[in-house]
Image: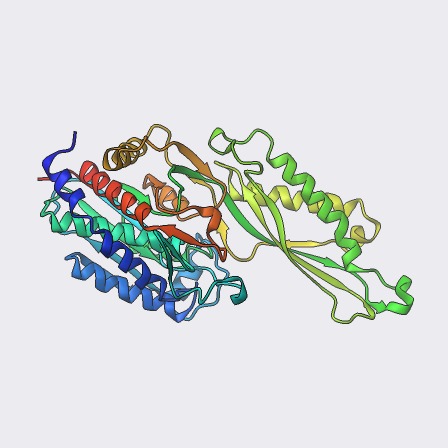
Length: 421
């Protein structure tokens, strides 16, 4: 049974405003590290101010952040970064619920793969298409819509809501790390990443690795005088595939539905500078999945050990071993403590707001900002509109109805978590 305040706040969720705001945010091409990423942060700071929140909008001290021993890594070059946190001011002694979302999107890739400009939203019925539609501008819009509905319904909160809008999630979590380092905290956190109608309470981690394999240059007409770095890499590739199989034995139950919960994938290979030369170096970069609860240092050690063992068994690599380094994003795993009430609160809020069944709980195989909040002692889960299966692709889209449903669920989650006066 909904309370009068709950019913009033649900009725105040504005579907037309949701559709309009989603399209406005997609039009800002906020690729990770770009000037438009900062542009969107300025835009969102203004929206939070107009909603009556107290806003902290600050330029991130990047050199200081990079020097922090716990910095989570980065892949995209950037000249600046901005943090944005908005807090409701009517709370008293109640808890603080964080609504978190990232503003950055990945590059659109081949323009020919899209039907039109990826940053000009295309609407087909209830669906809005475009880069960032589900990952995760729909989640940002759901947060904004929930905050607006609570304000418009005149509900006074006992605790507080803090909107954490962050940059750099796609390349390591720089924005969330900076926000937490600035001292913004809370008692629980809902991250509106696309979860396809489920509640995600755990994330596997992901570590970027670089493997440098030496060879010996020679003219291709006398290739026997050289050693191809490509050929030398092949036994390492086979060994990495075997390692993936070992690491995926008996995964955590929250990830058991996935064929490969902890993937080990080589994403790029670079070797050679001339067709008629034997290549003297190969550089492979890839992604190593981190198991739930695993120390990232243990995951790194496992890969380094396999590389060392493979080199020791190869006549050339024994004397000229491959090297492993760890550039780019470094995502640890993270999870909500088992039995934490936030899972039930969000699930029942969604069911009560929509009339649908309580969403099931599961884990996710990718890294996210969840692990940074969990590491800071803030219980966090993911619940948001859209499906990760279409994120990062030219098929990216989201249903406006789904954004509205999530916004309504967030309304009840806020009221039931921070309380009302």
